[in-house]
Amino acid sequence: MSLFQNIVIIMLLIVGAGFLSLTEIALAGARKVKLKILAESGDTRAQRVMDLQENSADFFAASQIGLNAVAILGGILGEGAFRPYFMAFVAQFYNGPWAESIGFALSFTLVTSLFILFADLMPKRLAMIAPEKIAFSVIDPIQIFIKVCRPLAWIINAIANLLFRLFKVNTKRDDNITFDDISAVMDAGAQAGVLLKQEHHFIENVFELEERNVPSSMTTRENVVYFTLNEAEDSIRQKLAEYPYSKFLVCNEDIDSVIGYVDAKDILVRILNNQSLLQLNESTIRTVLTIPDTLTLSEVLDRFRSTKEKFAVVINEYALVVGVITLSDIMITVMGDWVTPIDADQQIIKRDENSWLIEGSTPIEDIKHALEIDEMPDEENYETLAGFMMYRLRKIPRPADSVEYLGFKFEVVDVDHFKIDQLLVTRLAAKVAADILQGDG
Image (cartoon, rainbow, N blue to C red; front, top):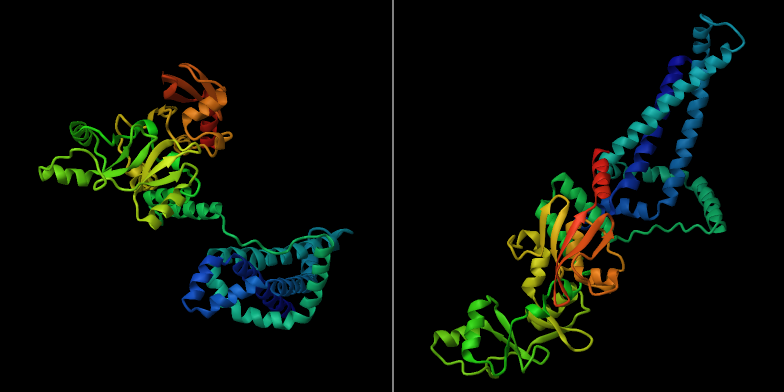
């Protein structure tokens, strides 16, 4: 054959190999979630691509048959077509015993470079840009190609399956979507500008409802405002004026003897109608929802939905009240910093880039967010920063007691009757240096 005929055949082989490379990456890279959405909207091509992904053994066998056959044939034709010309070119400068080898090397390099560039690299990069769109375009011809190669592909797959079983290799693909997968998609969406910063923040917090327990969002026992059954009317009026809550627990004598709760609206209506409160009675006291402190926030939402309540008292394993939680508390957890007022009562106050003043009752989940820590040590043993300090120190902390963890120093600042009020958290110098170096990198 003439040089022109060889070049035409090599070009056709490159186009064929490029098509197979393009198809291979497009079908492998097509996202199942997007294909499923398109299939449900009535696009039959999406369903066919999904079916091919589910049964990909025949396709990959046929693809490898085609690619290897084309590569071998291209090498044979290219070497025979170009070597005489390269040998003649080399002979102009060197006519020694290595002239033929040099001509062969140049011919091999040219053909290999053409196949790498036009049959492998460029098609694969193009396929990664829009895998679903390209997969739809090639699904018809590739299925015909698979049928043509099926006899040989069946033999190759049978041998491959035998070897996999011999070496006990599991060939089933795990398509389960994990939280890390969803989180990665959300991060990519935020970086691309598809998700706004607050939307990304809300979605992350919603997923955390399954991991965060009730104590992380409830009003703790010492901050619960309640009425006793025989409380004086003046005292009730004073609490209503002082605390802007919509619901108040009603207890017999102490907080652990819960009877129910009253809605501030019911009491205010009586006050506006100039009716005497006298004392709390069955007409104003409502049955309160009682939940254990081991529930997750997601489970509490389910309880609120099923009971149509928005307020619950939280008890521990000893039937002692540890706090109360409302639907608003959970929503504030979801909304996070976007609705939490920044004032003197804030639990976490950032003093500068490397130090924070934090209340001891702050939930561990909030600490992890503020300090950008993935996990705390043995965090199943405590729920608050104060609990972390007691767990690590193995004693009741005193002012100036400190703990170091992951490049942070947690130092007790104020203790009130064995209760840790405030801590100073400082990023250590080594941690600061490491962060700077990482940022430069």
